[in-house]
Every structure is written in C-alpha cells, then in structure tokens.
Length: 389
Image (tube, rainbow, N blue to C red; front, side):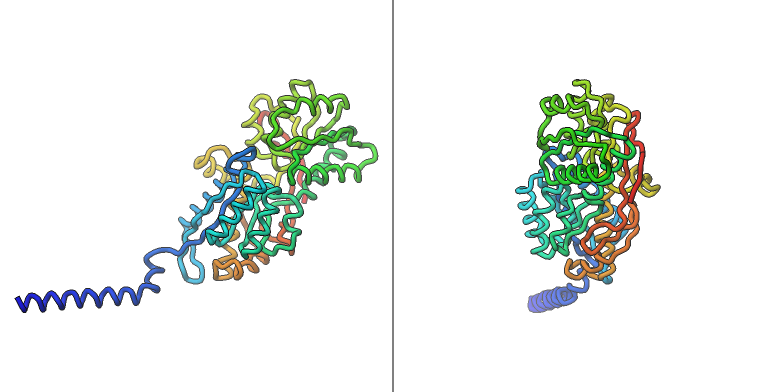
C-alpha cells in the first residue's frame, strides 16, 4: 500500500508540474492554439425605410470578413480572425448614437458605417472621442468629414460632387428649363437637393426651380405634392431621397399622368433597387440617377456573381462595405497593429487597390478622385449615360 501511495503521489506531482509548465508557456502557445480577434463594428439601417441598403452593406462586410478569414490574416507575426459586431441604427439619428456607444462599449477595433448622413454625422463624435476609426461606405453629406474628426473616412463622393454632377446634367444634357425639387427632410436628402439647386442656378440662366417641396423618408403618399407640382409641367423632378421613396413616387407620377424625368442621387441608384421595387412600372429612361463610383470593373462583376449566389439581389452598396473591411485590414497590416491609434495614420496615407478601384483619402478623410456615374434604366437594366470625376 505504501508503494502504491508513493507512486500515486509521484504521478500527481508529475501532472502538476506538467500543468504549471503549460501555464508558463501559455502566452506564447496561445497564438498557435487560437487566432486573435479583430472586432469590426458594422452599423446601419437594418430596419426602417432604408433597410434594403443597410442589409446590403452588412452582407458586403460579412462577405469580406469571410474571404479574409479564409485567406488568413497575419499582423506583426500574429494570426487574427475578423469578428463582426452588428448594430441596427434604423436610419434614426438618436438610435444611431446609442448604436455607436454600444460598439464603443464592445471595444471594437474599427467601425464600418453608418450609411445615412443623418446617422453618420452625430455618431462620428462618439467614435472620435473613443479613438475608434470609422469608415462610412456611402455617407455623402460633406459635414461628416468636415467636423475635424481624424477618425472619420468615407468611401464615396460627397453631396457637393453628386449634386453638382446631377445639376450640370439636368441643364446641359437633359436641357431642362423647368425643374421641381423635393427632399425627404434628412441630412442626406436636403444636402444633395441644395447642392443640385445651387448648381442649376449657377450653370444656366434659362433653367429655373419652379417648385420646392419637402416630404419625409417614411412617407408613401405623395399625391398632394405631385398634384401641386403637375401644374408647373416640369421637365425634371429632382428627389433628394432614397429608392424606397422614389419607387412609390414614380408609381403615383404615372397615375397622375406626370411624365417628367425623376432625378436623384446614390440613394435611389442601385442596379437592382428600383427594378426590384417597381418591376414593369419602371419606365425606360424616366429615371436619371448618380451613383457612387464608376461602372463596375471586371473585379466587381466577378465579385458580384459570388455575392448574388450568397445573398441574392445586389442593391449596389455591398461592394463599398466589402472594400471598407479590406482597406482597414490592409492599414492594420502596414502599421503592424490593430490598435486604431497606431493604424489610423497608415489608413490616412493608404493607397489600396480594391474591387471598386484605388482607395486613397485626402486630409479630411474624403476619397481622392472619386468617380461619379450617371445612369438611367432601360428594360429594367441600369445603363451608363455619363461619367465624371
């Protein structure tokens, strides 16, 4: 029995030594046993009027995370995996600040979002105060990157560029003389509408704004507004708003016998957005819209095949959130750190070739040489009609 007891004691002593040795080696071996995490917040309107755009952007970020994780991410010799932390801001500024604080509390390393200008602008202050880098895939209001927040970046042109391109096209190419303007009372809708009006007034003495109306981003009945506009027989109706507002408006324009062209920005310009919402009610060449970026490259076309198989319809926003995740990871690799304070300067100076083109930022965090494409729809398909930079 004594011999057995002594053997048992020696066995447990040996086991304890092995456990202590393993604990001593744990910090070095943990890198081999399990990948470290890069937590990226993804936030946008997953419910509410802009939910189609929000889900599209979320899907793009998810696809990027899956692709990067599959390839393997090595930063400063350490292996990482991306973990997405998702928040819904419902397109509402107050909910956006709550969502932003939730991402800060979750200790994310970066944020992709928000999407609408009204949510992105107030949320930007929260990220800046926490020192967290934020890239918005397609917020266009100029104020976003003019608040003095070094953590704010965008993947697209701003409203000044979009509104100017649309205003010049309305006057110079479409030959519009009488123009009605509607906005949806959001920061995005008002911003792009005001720049459109400014450009029309500065470009031509022969064109005039004959009606100025406002609705909301939640409205679906525009008969009163359109009936008032109809008496002016406008050549063009400009809408500062989203595709979910444009679709019922176009149906009601048709019912009222209004054949004016409807112009708008990127919020209504996804390749599948209006065709999916309107079907046969989408009249050839009636819509003219400006989208972020140029025509889809071969890279985007090839990527879109995989995206469609994975998620279904592509509303045009996913490619920007996809590239946003990639450019964040590239900046982390170049800086050798996932700490925003360390990799932010690398992001500010980056020149990265994504599927949407070359990504580089100016001193404010705006895209350098961001292209703007103008489209119409023929037989339910988006057709390029103009390209500017």
